[in-house]
Image (cartoon, rainbow, N blue to C red; front, side):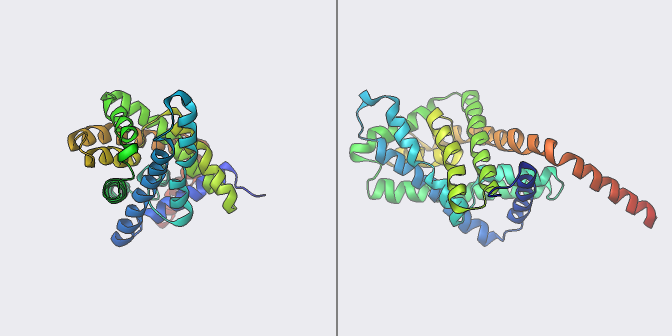
Length: 271
């Protein structure tokens, strides 16, 4: 067998979540920064591929851009990095399995989100603005893409965020299910490409593209903040509820109940 069963993936995800909350502050900072930078590289590739394509090509432009975007998550999951949207799945299922506390979950999410932001800002400023990779002939695409994100009302961005991380979390889930390098890449590529094709909103990707538009003299930091709040919340629901919780109910709920009964029986014997 070249893959794990869904129940085995649930066990792997729980173990991954437990490992993530035990990371040192230095590891969180470095891996979180890398995670934000890698997602930004994927979006930068999207802009460079689609930025000067003719509008007459229609949705083919989006398809070609979506085809290169997944490189960011491939770098994170196979090369090493921490991404808050992925952790919304792995740490959550560990929490539902009672392996981590709510405090550990919130600490991990918030710190990784902060360092993801720093990584995205680094790429947006130094590669996007300073070198000019998101400006010049590509500025119109950069600004129009960012403008589309910030134009969504709160609840639209929120629901779009749910759809996005439902797929991103599934990409992480499927990656854990594959045993070989190629299988992991394929497992990541298809769901991530799909969310980009649909146009769902991803909080870390938005940190990059909206910041790139800001550095070019368009949009504002307030618009960035007003976008990432609903998208972050939607991403959290998509990963924690639509993936972690639903799979936990199917594959791990009974195991947790049995563990709880065993613990209670042991306490009675000791008593």
